[in-house]
Length: 455
Image (tube, rainbow, N blue to C red):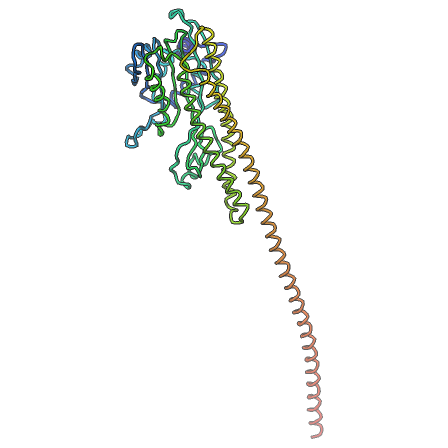
């Protein structure tokens, strides 16, 4: 009990626990499960920094030995982004560690992160249960020691990224993921005609910046599969390139720049994914028309039925996730507007039209998704009609076969009747022959008796 009380005390101080809203015991229980199942034994956190009076950004790797000092620097002036990924496969020649699916931070380092960055308790709880739906948080507080106002925000960015599929069809169908495509939460969607797998993931982001524009710290925890490192590293490369174009921190003072990079990358991945789903639906529709025109495509209807229902289940989940992204983006726009109004300053690096473009892109993506959901329903209706037509064809074929059988039965009955009549006639003739033979026999017998009497 003493250890629990001590941990609750630590969580209350480190994560700014609000007893009326946060259940400390539940958060600690979820955090321990998260540390056991998701965090690795070693620490390799990437730190990008844009320090004052430096023209170029710097990149370093934080381990167990230097994470505490580095986080103290992160809380000071400059722009800093902490990136936590799974093990990234940069070359196929490099061996995969046993814990490659876990995040590259140890439980002790993660608790140092919570303490030094003062991560909000709801964010820690949501992160510990990252596979479940969660909300987002925006907070503003005074920082007397800095003589500034500090703005904080955290949210989860759901992703759907398509990757090339190298598995053979039979191997894919027999795999665990291939047999669970109806579950869009934890399993991929295989698009056989496009040759890709759509894999779901998410990125957790926590950001803090002050009213002076001189301090910004962002924590990005990516759950993307490390086997596709090029995609996982895209936001990091874009952030570094964006900072390197700026001469100093003041010229890169927009605290919402990192969020824009993550959102625009995510929207590009989403666009490619929906385009792949659209191509797959068109391929399914072509097969359905072929099945209607020919009678030899009956076996494929079961495969199409399973594939279309899997797509329908995933699109329903995609709609929820895109809606969440759109609402989060609107919250960021509102937060940016409040930031400008509160400090009577305009963020000049990115104009309002740039944010409007992202908003417009989101609206078009949701409209495209709505179109795909309608297309799935049309394909399912076409599939139902195709199945009904196939059943009707079978009924007609069965009726024709039954008619032929009845005709054959009638002919057989007619032949049987003729045979029976012939049998009756043959029996009558045999009866007459029997009577005649008896008459001849009686005559012969009488003739012998007469011949013996005469002699």
